[in-house]
Image 1 (cartoon, helix red, strand yellow):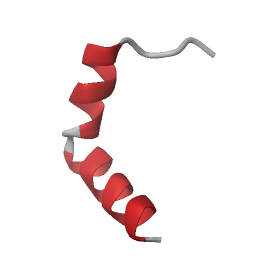
Image 2 (cartoon, one colour):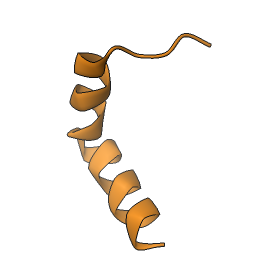
Image 3 (cartoon, helix red, strand yellow):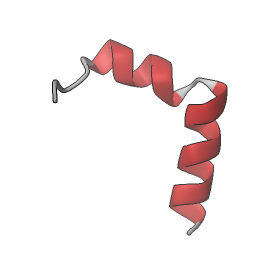
Image 4 (cartoon, one colour):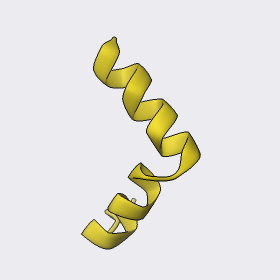
Length: 28
């Protein structure tokens, strides 16, 4: 599996699903 570039990762992280996932993940 290829690792995403930082720009791709940041773009995903700020997407709707990415934000939801990180909120859920970080809050446990």
